[in-house]
Length: 127
Length: 127
DNA sequence: TAACTGTACTACGCTACATAGTACACCTAT
DNA sequence: ATAGGTGTACTATGTAGCGTAGTACAGTTA
Image (cartoon, rainbow over all chains, first blue to last red):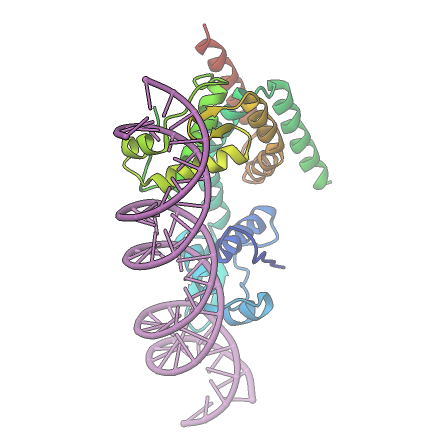
């Protein structure tokens, strides 16, 4: 379910965090679902338990999972809402990138086309 | 002309590279313009000459400036084209981010509105 | 000649990241 | 109660990237 690219410039623990968020958004991980244990996931991904623990700790801090000592880690009830809220706050970052695209001569119509493509394809996926 | 945020997680030399690119896109830096010398810019920004040199080396590698030993560094003739080409290749990265926005429930119309806002404001800037 | 330019190199310190190992407290099934 | 799972905390080590410091060399220009 999870995959890691050790050669990426992005830290392993951060890759894990982002994958969990994406899976929650896609509905693959749902509220109440139990996450793999720190030790089992570290074996699966061939990384150190501390690295997984760091990712889980960050996810807990963000309110996406809830850690229960002795039992396990579970997807938080408000996980989707927490991520949605974060993504929405990142609209400003997206704005800056689009501005760079405009400066680089990318036409407005190209971006509109891109968006249409994504939203149409996304809708079809759920058919 | 240039400014650095030492507290940013983004390396200083990378901040410099991005600023030069942005200035070229905005037309503030034009082909043939001479860049500040490695040593003078390092004094202005209170960073090490090696850090500036690393940025200039990267810009040279990207074809955005041309280093001439003994004379100085000059904005390349094809600087704008090189950056435009790079930005266009980053459309895929933008696509992934928009897809994330869609998954997070951001409406298509919100993004369209954002784009309209940016392209209209950008046009007015040149009046 | 002197002062500027870019370039190259070594050395040091700092931080982030990842690993390794150990230990503790909690829960649960046996 | 015991054993084995769970999350958590801690120290120690190694590596890589980044930034700084200092020095040196070659080319250009006034």
